[in-house]
Image (tube, rainbow, N blue to C red; front, side, top):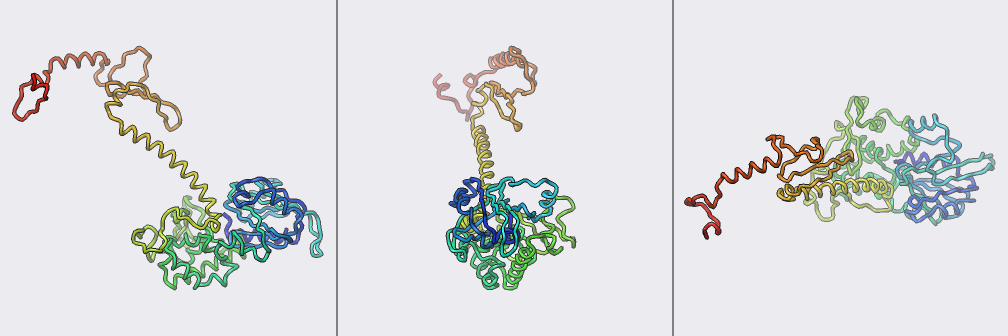
Length: 455
């Protein structure tokens, strides 16, 4: 997911290629999720953007916006896979993406485009500008595009930006050590979960949070209200330092220090990987439902961590570390969109498992006599989807499903070598030889039925 540095990269290209330009045509493609989920539509966006002059571009954390010469203005979020592409320049920030684009023929308009802006040749501030096209793309449809009707300078005072926390780079005057101390100590949640919550801070995503915590030498599961002043100061310095460098380098990882965890955290599960240059091991664990990369030799637990505290022991008013805790919808719209998709998949799997468990429970609770007396064929689905016939014999035995014989052929018991008919005859003869309980003499302490007494 594009985080604070990656979004800064897009803002850079918007300022370079679009600010000051007139959008001659805008072609927006209908999508009732990307537009519709935030009360907009492709038609409304297309109609308003056409003919508008772009006056500015900026960001607040993971959100970015373009202001026009006339409101409303465009406020956008990339979700998991969204991005802005320009036909004049490659904008990818990861080496793999750059190499892929370099080796392949550029497709335009790009696949999964949500809108395409076209600018004709024109002169801007005395400089001739060539024709240009820009496209917003998103393969997974977790991005959001909307129009916000307000004055350009007040856009951060409107939804959805006003529900989000301060930006660690734009709002350094707000994100002070004192501010962070108060935030940490009024909550009781794993510190990484606190950093990822966009209602607290704008722009911190998974890799940024891991980098900040690694540099601050803090374990991601430790509760936010357990840190002393010295630890909070380290956390603040790492937060401001990592976010600032990510923005200044436009998320170009080649410019990150070689000591950064981010350079080595992606090799999860690879042999002889997940090791820092100094030999320290990187391990991965789940915190708040997100995979976290940590260095145990550096990030030690110094107080209670998630799972160590019984929720019943928490005082009233404290946040309980319950799974699936609801957050402010607008403030964390980006993370919720991704989690919704994961939750849908998980629910589907749980549903399938529940059906299978229920079927097994019913079968287990069925009386053995009823199972033995059915004497009919049942179809059972195997893992590969094929139907295997299982025959339950009337005498309670189970026949080998691989032992298939033509119709009319007497079934032979594997243990005795006799057919069911012969076995039945033998059992009848044995019954005649064995005296019934009623014919046997009564002994002291034995119980006899009422019918026997009557005789």
